[in-house]
Image (cartoon, rainbow, N blue to C red; front, side, top):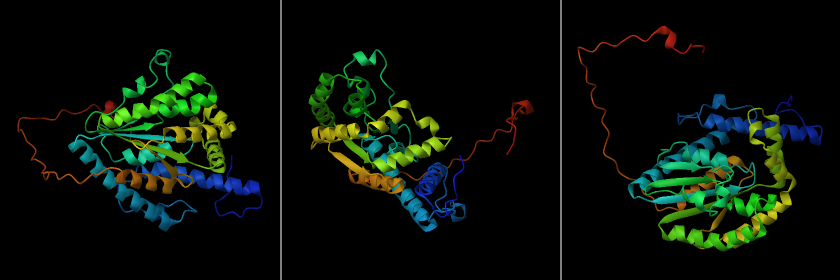
Length: 309
């Protein structure tokens, strides 16, 4: 499908919608570009057409600054043997994956890892509900980011009828005690709900439909969740009301603006932990040992990957 230029005048609601989709696609490609940029000086000549270059550069500067603080947080977690769990919940296309990518982008995956569990298999469905999540909890010196969590039962499982009413009620009876037990065991538990509007989810789903690189993100469950927007809203309200406890409160991230949501969430996360910079001994690169008897063996030309670029 051909999209109109970003600077084209809008002559109808349809044209306006397509221009919004185009801008959202540009933003999604920006996300992938972010993950490749290592230089702290953003190349403004590479900014996509129609994007505020000054605002984009300011966003990158702040993102890099926050990611520098996340590295300090990681060092502190590892040095002081902290155990940190961060839950990311929200509607489909709310931007959970995007902020998780930005948090973990510069971190050591042995310290900060992501748990994104698939649907339970036949054996897991017979286990204690929390059992498969417990296996992913952190040891000392680790951070675990749950891309969706045990709150699946309060959302998709309840709305789609994948659990019984009794199982749903048992979840709400159990989860506060479960989370208090985690906190008493020394785990810091932080819970985020990413909030977007009906209109914004509609726009993002349309963007995925028209973006061949992201069509895989749309599942039949996503499409059904779109139809059941109001049911998911009621489920979310019940979840927040019944599981917002002092030991592990919910924090709501306004996520209609993806970039602001990432920065706000990361800044808030840093505020939740009393981390400090850990001093390290200066690193010196040792001299390479050279053995006069060593002869490097040639690699057969057929083993090289063709240099097409």
